[in-house]
Length: 497
Image 1 (cartoon, helix red, strand yellow):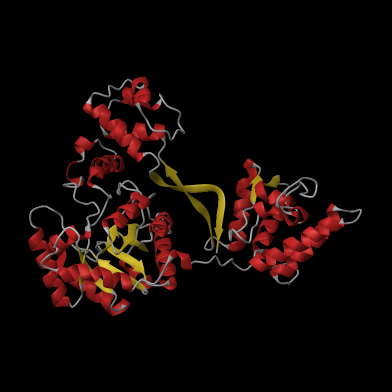
Image 2: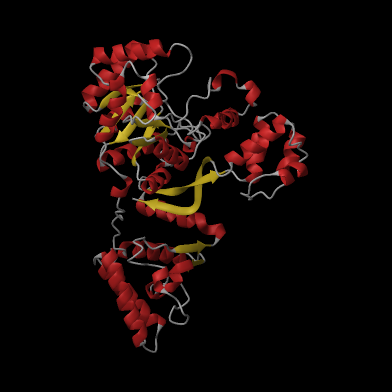
């Protein structure tokens, strides 16, 4: 093979920084690197999470690279890790349901997902799976698992294998190939990727230390043994698996099974029961005209009538009536309980929001542009922000849980990311700097800053940039800036299904 040889290969064993303190590259960086290296396709499979798949998908559209969203299933019952990729829209729903089911377990620790094999057997159909067993430790258990999965979930099953670069890879891969041959389950290659370039290995060490809450010097065997778990060009993967080229070809067959794209998802708003028994659009029209009569007791101006008609027509075309009814119902409850609330933002541009009581400033009184709120061209759903008095917000939340049930409602997640102060504080701790130095460093910058940390911050914190450890701290802190630290809850954003 020469340097211009194109090797068809797709990498599906990729974890990004949305594996939270494990992966050391952003989803976008991995996609860009894969495109530059000539990959046929890639898939993102973060640890028990699909939080990063949209970012990778958006970047893949820019790069014109085939991309598949998935998940690395990590179990709490001894089942080996499994790469799970939905084959279609139903499979995506099942994957999300499986993760939700595991997250809802009472015994799940904060930040952990307690998946069990039964979850996979219940929801794993319509997915392509690559099992990643340690055959040296549990070959018989792995055989039993593969047979169970094959019997329950069908034939879309692979045995994944990756080099570990510890001197016995030839034996490991040969063992896996023999095992695959004996079971009739295809062998599939992966490099078990944690970052897009080997230069990120030092950052991955720091992330491991932060996750384990010990200095890097004390992490020991929990650190990766080398810097090889980066995205490798297809030609290099072909060299590593030169005795088993079918393991590379299997990645393409695996990808061909995956017809699902995040672009297939269309928001299906849940049914919203109405007091009158009318359909959603008719109910919204009734509320709008009744509200208009209250707002304009001397008579509704012709300009307002025209605007109401135009907005109602657009809402009907875009099928948004149920959303307006949901917000109206929540506000009606709050006001009935004497809870102060006020709609704000671009919703103030809507005469319908004004008429049904969501906002209090009539857009007919000010020069507003309705298209800022809803636009047929943008193809984005409306966003109605409502402020509730802080002390009684919990009452509103409990009303939502009661009306729609806790099984169909949840607070939206929020990604907590590193900024200047938190990045310096945690990296310096991971590098073993003393508490007083850490305090001086984190106090030298504004807490919400996302600007690159440089000489000024180093001097203010008492760091000598010529010192290797100090330089390492600043470099890693800059790399980690903007990385997701963990998931939290939004203060009041709800998902209703």
